[in-house]
Length: 240
Ligand code: HEM
Image 1: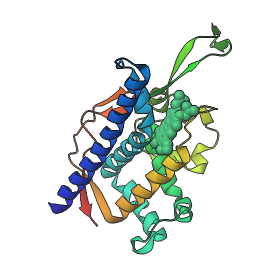
Image 2 (image 1 turned 120 degrees about the vertical axis):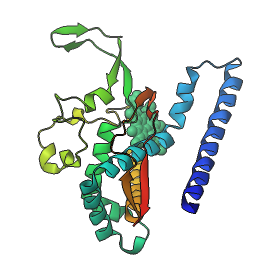
Image 3 (image 1 turned 60 degrees about the vertical axis):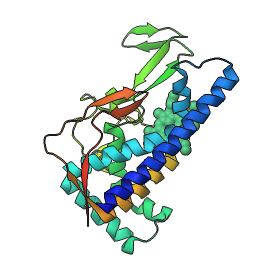
Image 4 (image 1 turned 30 degrees about the horizontal axis):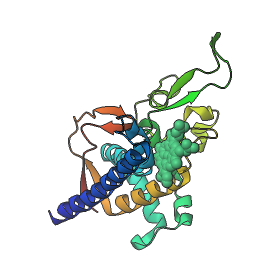
């Protein structure tokens, strides 16, 4: 399949490019620290390439979910094709007009939040359920677990973009959805990331139909600073 071969070549180009950046960064860090860098230093490097990995990761997971939810995919296709006729360039105005797209992307970010946790050091004592967590304690906030909590989301593991319709979001705690973290150290690239994901998704769904590779496939997710899938996010792409 020539299309598949081309796609693999382009993907390899992107991976080579990203690896080259990581290698260069590692060399720079070695020079600066004057000795061998530890495994943990990879976290710093990964943070710097996080803008790339996070976007591709959430995009892949959304395409995977769309392959399993034909109704969602068709509703999204209808919205996209009513806004971008003849596959023209997508403007910010087009993106802003895609209301259902916003719900689909948010639902992808909820279920497959690329940042699985964030860390903070407490500046002051915090009371939780009658117990005091003292100032100075390092805490982890597990975004992945929060986003998949049944206490917060009904049928939490179901991919259901309607959770993010204006009516369904009414009354939900804003802290229940924090893929980009919150507060003064939140993600500075979040708006750019949302635009990137929406543009790519619009182009892909306008031109291709996603189909599941297998109905019985099980994802094997794990966290390596970012959310990863041992099994990948397999889909069949058919040209529309
Ligand atoms: C879906 C895409 C993305 C997700 C889910 C995401 C998520 C996050 C999260 C959760 C943090 C906060 C870490 C913390 O609170 O400790 C963060 C920080 C950051 N993000 Fe992103 N990010 C994404 C894309 C991007 C992009 C595209 C860029 C750059 C163009 C970017 C640049 C940054 C930077 C520089 C920080 C550090 C901010 C600071 O420490 O003050 N991110 N991101």
